[in-house]
Length: 250
Image (cartoon, rainbow, N blue to C red; front, side, top):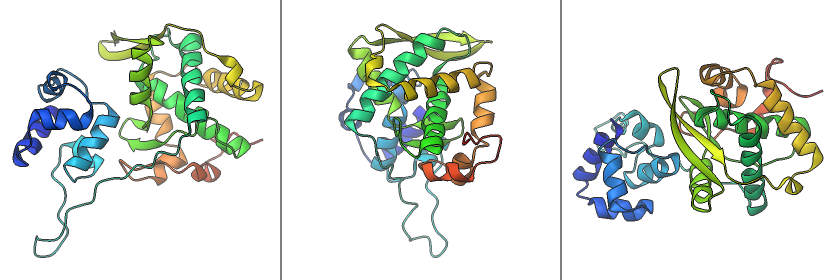
């Protein structure tokens, strides 16, 4: 379990649970649930822990000690990943409305859990950039073993839950645990242009028949994902090197 690995790293550095909880912005009881494997670690929290433990996000997620460089064994370990957040307040509001719109349109479908939402957001952002050379939301996506994952997703969803804009529910999809989100308010579509709404609709239609496994596999074959290193951000500019089956340029 990753919780046990985190506990080992904390103990080795003589850090208290209270200290790490404060660094993550959560209560000690919530932090304890992470170590005991009773609560999932969000990507935002994992990124913070990797920096605190002075290791890469990849090392943390794979539960591996940082690799020591060749030599006498005294060289510095692999440096932690620094994910640059490029999103603006305006784009963050668009992100909120796009997410609510997705949940209203396809959120009730059995396969549309958190993992599928990550991939839908990825294709909405990267397809739009390829087609118009502009950002729609402009989220920062990192290369994860499950495909592209938007860094801003976890903190925004947590904020939306607190504001009662959506609710998270646990369910099973073909006996696999799944986290789904239910919209509690209507999206403010006036924030999005007609072109942006049309684009979102085209992505939802394009992937309407794909389940979680298919979305993971398909997104991991796209050029931006292939060109990136694990735990590091995907470059938007790599959409211009896409294979024909991924390209949306006319």
